[in-house]
Image 1 (cartoon, rainbow, N blue to C red):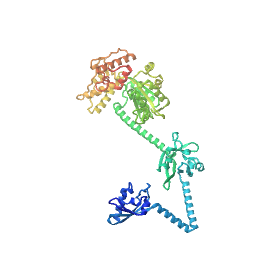
Image 2: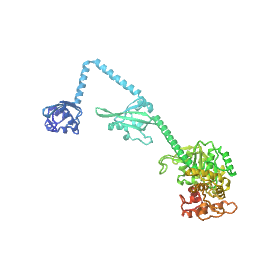
Image 3: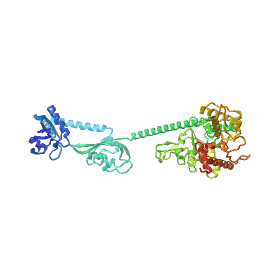
Image 4: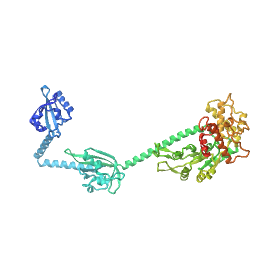
Length: 609
């Protein structure tokens, strides 16, 4: 017993039994701080004494005073309130109490005689049998190890999974038998094993990313829990419960692949949707092949012949002659019309991104590849791939394109998986690819692969009878697009349009019509074109008074045409101060797309000043 003064935090007195129990002389206990006897438990001590004073009597098992030898005692404290705010604390040694209880039970059993011992034996035997039945019925593998890492028992489920008989494992180092190597094949030291750590640090260890090894040398993924076993406070071993998660991992992997496929399909649909919206906006100006000239009728017949097949088509012709329109007509008349027509402007793709643009890339394939990307070939699967300006593909990448066309399969950049693709290819160019092959700037085998069914887009100057129909169509579209009343197209306008040479072809005609709609006054179209006899390389250059070379009456040769084109570009760049893109740039001046102009400059070796 102790008498405490809670206010002063002092032990007033203690009897001899308290001195023996606590391991301090009685004289030393008198005057000792009560909290000093309970290091680190001052809050619990205050709560206990206040409860005693409030209730008159209280007890607790939470207070664990420290013995004079340094060990922590497991006691029961019963407090009784005394006059003057003092508290009488009676301490009971719980270990001693348990021993007395066991002794009482033993004495009772001894007095009960042999029949009671037999009854208890049956009870223990039944418990053991039940434990064995539970271990045998468990679907998880269960085994035990002692503090030396030696196996103490193995249940049947563990035997089945590991391929070992329990008799072969009991008494052996379990880590060396089934847990000796990491999944990647490198050794797994005993000191790093979480199973053995359980009976060293006394903590439960749960692991879900390791493997166990069977007797035949194969491995399987496992999840396991290693729980320490204590005997009277001492760590004596661990029990391990594990399960084979191979099927779940396979199911997770299939699910992961399925989800990845869903993500890929979603991205592909999003790309298709965005691409188609862009193409609809780009193609809304000119929905069909317009004209009744023999040249146009010949092109229509060629389209009808080839559309029903999967043959590769090469559309050739000058810039602005409607090569993309021919490609669209082939696609729309083919069995692939329900799938997209995917266009790639080869002249606008940076050299370093050709492979990624065509074939896609895996995340991390190069700096900036933050996620998987679907390439144009994969996007066009089941549909048509239109390669515009195909002559601009770098020579060293032409072989990769040829391989895809031959094998109908490809790999994304940074990925080893081969993907099959079903694509119908239509290519277009304003270059003379035969000449490019001859000069070594285009692969001959790729040219022959592309040139299965050639279609030539006729320049506008060679089919002047189509100009009125095209102009009227463009006039209606431009007025609707600009939100202005549609001006009239007079006979005089038609004569002026048909007299002009149209070096920029249909694209230049479209620009001229749209400019005329903007400048229209009182419903009258105002065409800004050179008058007859003003032979000029382009309408805009003629307006500035800088005429290019005037060709003779005979058709120009290819060499003359290229020299003529080069001179026009050089003169346009000089007029624009080297500016290519945007308003007032050379591309606008020549009635060309900026990418087309950049492509021609590269082909002709022209540098910006």
